[in-house]
Amino acid sequence: MSEEPTFDAEQFTKTLTWHDPTPSFKLALSMSGLDYLTEMAEGRIPPPPIGAHIGLGFSSLAVGDVVMTAVPDASHYNPIGTVHGGFIATILDSAAGCAVHTTLPAGVGYTSIDLRVNYFRAVHAGAPIVAHGWVVKSGSRVAYAEADLHDGDGKLLAKATSSCLIIQP
Image: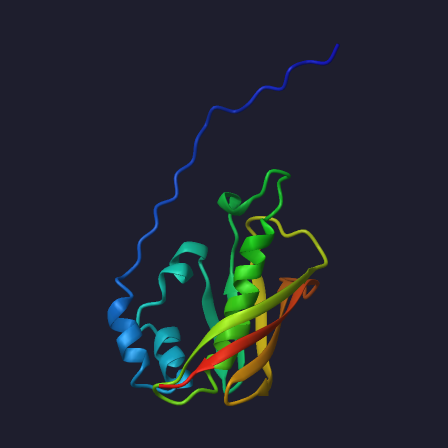
């Protein structure tokens, strides 16, 4: 007869702090996408709440190309002890979408309309991950982007393709 599993009664807490995003959204309309994201990366504009929630930040920005980093923690685990695929998809969607955003002039927005993710390796808490997003084709109505996710050793963890609807004023 097998022994019943025992569970550690220790509980953990994660406190999130973010700014009201409304002023930033309004400011975004007055700046090119690259300028807006550069101001954010340099700390002059607060990041969106999702960035605070998942610890996502920029490493580099250029027209049509971004690199973002995050360090998943155990609060991102799924029931089998690896980082949840939704967390990975969120990082990839952010990298691809922000790459598109860097190509847009002031007053023009975007939103994801499609995201396809392929997962290649399990992701574990505590190790930095790096997402690289780039624009494949930019159009007046739809932009296409790709993103990949690597661990600190450069191993490919996941890859995504994305379509973004371009929202004209």
